[in-house]
Amino acid sequence: MQTMKRLTEAYRRARIEEFDDDARYVFLSDVHRGDGSMADEFLKNKNIYIGALEWYHAEGYTYVEVGDGDELWENREFKHILWANGSPYRRLKRFFDDDRLIYLYGNHNIQLRDPRFARACFDTIPDDLGRPTPFMPGLRPIGSLVLRHRDTGQEILVVHGHQGDVANDQIWPFTMWTFRVFWKYMHAFGVRSPSSPVRNMFKRHKVERNYRKWIQEHQTALICGHTHRQKFPRDGVPYFNTGCCTFPAHITGIEIVGGQIQLVGWRVEPDANRYLHVARRVLAGPEPLSRYDAPHEPGTPYRPGPRW
Image (tube, rainbow, N blue to C red; front, side, top):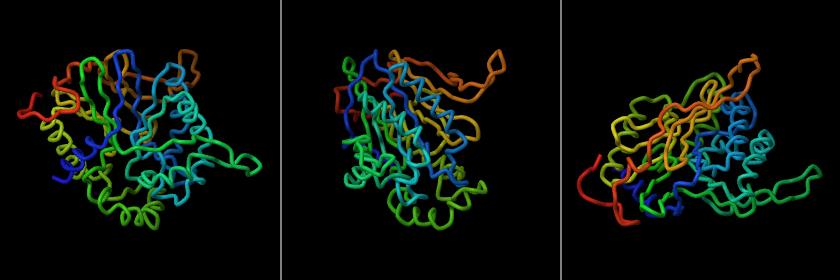
């Protein structure tokens, strides 16, 4: 029940972003940019991620980071993450400078919901001589986003997905403490925390059942991350999960382009000349977004009786 309540709160507080069939969005989550140490789960996919961002920027996409982009549970200070990931953050700055960056926080960077903390992280960074220089001034991560089609009124809720997950939502300070003093070092050996749905199958399925229940009750599509398991609906219930950027050798995400939605993956592959390159592949879809629309007046998604 907590998940249902927290998702509804997220919907009501969400930033509204209007879009049309010409819009292009890519949704990536759970990047977990770390400090470059052995415990940094992002390190192995850094080049794949950079290659994907280069392509999305060149193709005119808006980049939506669906939470847990910065690993602030295991690392106390953002500057250590920034120093280890200058190249990825330079790519993010390009989207920011072009007004094509939407930044959601998740449980692993929930500190960014504090505007003062966000300002300290993003407004300025030191240059080579230690002098403060503008970075992404004014960037204020949000907790939830509603995409609203300006012609049909169709709505899609975008959240990280930790809402209502007790260990990662209500008591996150304690869970973060366990990561900093214990699980960070266990991650270096591939051991996962049982508080995470990533390796806890029962917990993951429970979270996903709650997502689907909320979708059916509120007749609104959902895009999220958090579980690290990519999902594309096969039964019509519009639950989309981006997957993550910390798989052993690939990353996954959701794209909306041309009025359609699809699940994609990126990995390093050899081409016909045996040169390695970062390759994109459609894993599921595309499907028309209109397939998942439950017509209603914008801003009033609550209707009795599931449609899907």
